[in-house]
Image (cartoon, rainbow, N blue to C red; front, side):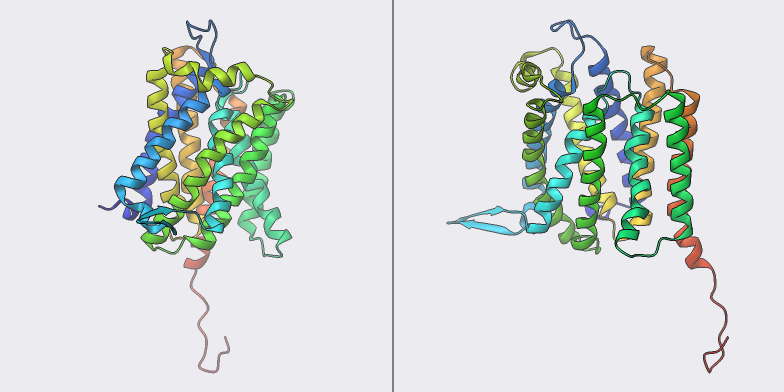
Length: 344
């Protein structure tokens, strides 16, 4: 079976199974002391090597699979190099925001996996109807119901914590994630959600040759900002990490990251409507996050998810299920019979 023809249900299952070790390893590295440093690794120490290794894997995949031929080509004598179009370059900007915000979100001390996932997945559902209103598009009843469910989930979880209480960099991470997700999804819908395998390949190649280098650059810029002035950490993440004992886990993390990147694109680029595809990807990532939280609690004695966080996650999954099911349920209702003159 060709990768581009992978059923969305199977792609989602594999996505969940590859995302689970990705979350587990990232959390373990950021909470378990490294014997060389005498403390756990920070996001700025984990991400550079992971992104670099994942980019190498992606380049190898693009070349060996032949997907590079589906992208626009730049001729250099006898050679031809894939290049992004203006749309895939824009999507690459959105994907770059996701590439560094998702793993970074798992490294904040005192911020649980279910809570950060509720914020980062829930805010997309909260903002979506507002975006539709600004664009003067009709918002269906089920969107408002899902919005209310997510709002309740956020209120319950934040209230149980006694307030938001997030580091400035964590807040910035959530904001950048939301922006990146909307940019990417909008471009996908415009240029590649048409069922054409070649369009899918060209989109993926054009996006990734922009996204990975830009994500690495974004990390460097964040490390130089007032929000994260940890130049020594970033230097270790780019240089010292390669000789560290953490490398075996980082290699596995990069391989998982590589698989997740491809599978997420396959799910979101499925030719069916976004209200069908997006809930699949959202649900898989949330389920992976809550499973990882319980594995960490049982096997590594990390804190269990709080009852409020579990309630919030359940409400979020229910909202996602509603957004996925309601549009098809509405279309399945038979229309009233009409007479030959067109009157009911």
